[in-house]
Image (cartoon, rainbow, N blue to C red):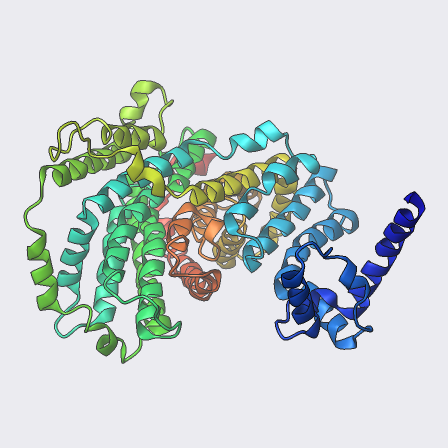
Amino acid sequence: MEVPLIVWLLKLAFEVPFVALNSGILAMLRTPTSPYSETQNNQNMDDSKTPLLLPTVQSSPPSHGGCLAFLKSIFTANNLAIASGPLACLLIYFLVKLDGPRECTGMLAVLAWIFLWWLTEAVPMPITSMAPLFLFPIFGISSADAVAKSYMDDVISLVLGSFTLALAVEHYNIHRRLALNITILFCGEPLRPSLLLLGICATTAFVSMWMHNVAAAVLMMPVATGILQRFPAGRSPGSDVTRFCKAVVLGVIYSAAIGGMSTLTGTGVNLILAGMWHSYFPNEKPLSFSTWFFFGFPMALLVFFALWGILCVLYLSKSSGTSLVAYLDKSDLKRELELLGPMAFAEKMVLAVFSMLVVLWMTRSLTDDVPGWGALFHGRVGDGTASVLMATLLFIIPNKKQQGEKLMDWNKCKKLPWNIVLLLGAGFAIADGVRTSGLADVLSKTLDFLETVPHLAVAPIICIISSTITEFTSNNSTTTLVIPLLIQLAKPMNMYPLLLIVPGSIGAQFAYLLPTSTPSNIVGFTTGHIEIKDMIKTGLPLKVAGIAALSLLMPTLGPVVFRPSHQFHDS
């Protein structure tokens, strides 16, 4: 009995794959009208004990159409996109030679894999964001422990705390109340979508002037989506309502970045610039809040109106007002606001906690003359510290609705965006990998040519380079990478260093093309209203407008605001 069994197994092992490949059995099994599937279904109904593999050996003769269908099922667009990442990674790793250590090439290869998957969305973006956890150790870029630590730092703590507060705002309908007030104030009568869009963007930019970009985006996104929730679901992709939704979400995330540009404390990049300036030139006048504001605010104003114009041209049409008026009637909005009634104790407490957090963010670190409350803790606290502290208060303060019930509980936090945490962690891991692998040094050597460039062209070129690098690393990492090199180039170019490092720092804030370029982009991307192609379509002309504005202001306003001292001239 053993020999026939072995013979039968060998026959099965060789004949089944042959028939499956040439007859396209896998494709035929997916076809409901296939004769084989009907026969197989009948056999299974008649005798459930019939072996499933035996009929495949007695299959019909090879079919050319079935083989073609089988190949088509393998070479799908999604499968090709999945294969493109590892393939590009291997090609770069074995064929590209960089002037640096082997880890430098490995980092470039890993970047190709991750960004191809991000751009094509062949694999869900949060899953792709975990790729550094296994790619970095495999390619010798960093240890497993080191890369894992990138997925939890102060900025991620800031996001977790901020989103907890945002969930509280959403739970008590505070965002709806604020959205109704903004809509009533700016919608106009008759409805003017461009004016409403301007109001949302201007509010976001103003808020971002006094707090972190991510926090501003987190605060304003529920307000924006509160307006968008009035529109019906299941809209066609090209409808006026859908296009307006895209414009609002894009306006919030880009306005958050533009507003932070205008003040010294509005973004970490400006603080890094001020700190490095004082570190390299301690005898020079520090870069104060007022000094930066005189340059940063006009710069932000130009870019802001460019953003508004771009959004109106790309996403609004003459028929937009007619399409939106049915959902944004001013009298209905006022009636809806009245139905909300006066603010309850819980709403007031959530707003009080959020206001306390804003004050802590604004006053933690100001200038060298006024160090802020963070100096009391010797610089050990960050924005994430304050964010988590204030979020914790929500689980302590009662809501006065039911006995023992607090403003927030853990069940309300189940909607925390862990996908954003993974995306941020991937961005920080990539930034560390670019630096530790030596790829940053290779990239920085490409700036040596600036010594021969005419002075008027220096600012836009530096801005272009910095704004390109910042799409692939964090804004802070780009600033930290570019500023030391630009300071070194200032002396042979006979230029005041601030006139070089300011364009580099501002360019690092033009991270408009990818969701992972900056955390505020991720906040908008996770709403589901926009795609990567929308960010590229809007972000590219906005980046060009920003570079043009900088090219105009640096040779005109720059020398007036950033004047060197007499000691610097003498040296």
